[in-house]
Image 1: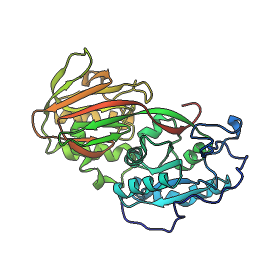
Image 2: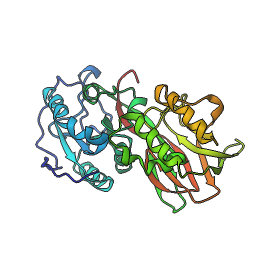
Image 3: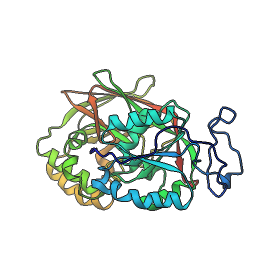
Length: 351
């Protein structure tokens, strides 16, 4: 994230005013009405009030600068619908999490991430365990969690949808890496080629959608050697898997990498993750698969092994990085577990 410091409203509660009944989803946040209490029929709720405006955390570099370009039209949509919101530019993951914690302490209870899966990941880590509702305005390169929520791909249309959305409970994944770090992530993570590709993805930031991730993977493939990976499933009777593999992943969402559907049956609210292996493919096989990945976003079934579980431990035969949502989280071995119904997020009623 790049440094940006536009002026924004202070993160302190404002003078209470009467709620605007023209809105579509309103959360009254007072000691008498804690989060989740509803004060009027569903069709009349709105997501914020002037007393507690929504806090929108903007990653200005998300999507190759797409987030920055979308701020003005999205602000206009919020204003047209009389939805109070403060847009807060953040220059790093640490800054976003700090601003989010400050906002929560100041009484904000509706927090939106304007960026991609990595931006939402930062917000989830700051807000997990707090009485808040989160949302995503998808302006990143991947936006796989937004896709799992069935939000429109277009950020402007997604902003409109958010203003008539309802909160729902969703799962997140918790990764504990070899250095003892604990980090939550929302979509896909893994070891192997995709983790190596995450290190190169910034260089292809200007490429659209999954092309960016495939280009980074092809760049990483030039130096990558397959791993011997073992997957164990603690606290279950599932047998371990071990194989020479291109990558091994743990997914909460059906896709990652901007629509690469490696776990098509995954759901974000079933209390399970999808552990998967992509078998050791030659460079020629990988290149042959690129047109299919670009067009359909999947691989032949014979290339992928999947297991549904609540927890998986991944061990590699050499030092290897683990990523979550395209962010490097630490070194393997890594244990990933599902945190069921961990956060509430705004989603279209049909999701």
